[in-house]
Image (tube, rainbow, N blue to C red; front, side, top):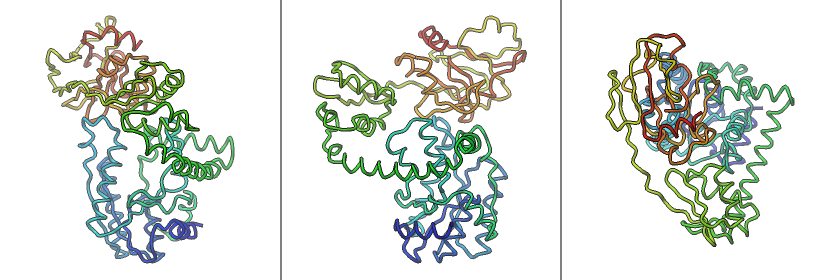
Length: 447
C-alpha cells in the first residue's frame, strides 16, 4: 500500500509536480531510506541530504558512510553536514532533541536554497504522527498540537503521513532497501521512545487497532483546527496587540481556544490561562498573571498585555577549583568524608565528582529545560517541577540549574538529576549548598 498512498499524497495535496526535483532528508534509518528509494522509483530526481548530529560517536559516522555508499551506487547526488548540537546546547536551556531538530531544519532549508530545490521531503509516517499527538497531550498543547505533524510546512513536505511503520518495513523487505538501526531509538531516557515502546503497545493490548483509530482521529482534529482557524481568523485579526476586550471573549464560542491561541506563545502556562479566563469572566479587576517576559492584567473592560523587561540574573562558570564569587547563590565544596551527611541541609546535594565535566555552568533555569530527576524514570520539565513544588513566582524566577556539558545536574535547592548523585557511603563528593538570602523560603517550598 505504500506506493499508492505515496502517489495519492503527492497528487491530492500537491506536494510535488511530476518530475520535480526534491531534496530528501536521509538519516540512514528504514523510514528515510524507503522514502528515498520510493521517490526515485516514481521518477522524481532526488538529492539525499544527511545531517550528522555527532551524538553517537562512530555509529553516526557509519550511518553517514552507509547513506553515502548507497547514493554512489545509484548515482544519487549526496550532501552531508556535521551539526554542532552539543556546542549549541551549552547554556541554551534546551534539550538535545530540540537543538538538533532546529539545526537540522535550518541546514536543510539552506541546502535546498543552495541547490535550487523548492521541496524537502521528510519520512514522517502515520505512527510518528500518532506518537507526536500523544506527546503533545502528555506535555500539554493547544490547537496546533492537536493537528499533529503538518503535511507541509514551508519547503518541508511529508508524503508518508498516511503510511504505517509496518508498511514501510514491508516495502524495505520487498525491495531490499538497506538501512541502519539507530540505537538511540530504544533509549528509554527519551519520552518518545517510551511512548513508542511502552504506551502504544499497552494501548494496542487494551484496544486492538488503537493506532489506526488515533490516526483517523488526527485527520478529524486537523479538519477541526482548520475550521476553527478559518472561522476565528477575522476575530483574531481584529484583536489589538496590547489587549483582549471582554466583549471579544463574550462573542467567542470557544474563549479558551482564543486565549490559548493569543497568549500561549508568550510563555503563559495553561493553568494560568484557565485562571485568567475565570478572572475575566468573574471580573476580578486587578488580577495579575506573569510569564518570563509578559504580564497580563485584568482591568474593567479588557485583559491588558504588557511586555516586562526581565531582571538580569547572572550565570557563572565553575572550574575544577569550584570557586564562585561572593554574590553567587550556591557554594560548592569537596568533601573527603561522609560524616557531615547527618548535617546536610535540606535542599543541599552530594554529587559524584567523577560524573562532572568542567567547566560547569550555573545559570537561571529557562522555559524548555528538562532533566531526569534522581529516583524517577523518564524526564521532566523544570517548569512542572517548580509548579508542583508551589514555588512562589519571585523565587521561581531566581531558581538556578547546574549543568555539566549542557546536561542539567541539579535544580538548585530542589532535585538532583539521575546519575549525578553520589551513592550513600561514597567518601569523595562535591557538596552543593544554597546560600541566597531567600534560601529558607526556597528550601521550605521544595520540601
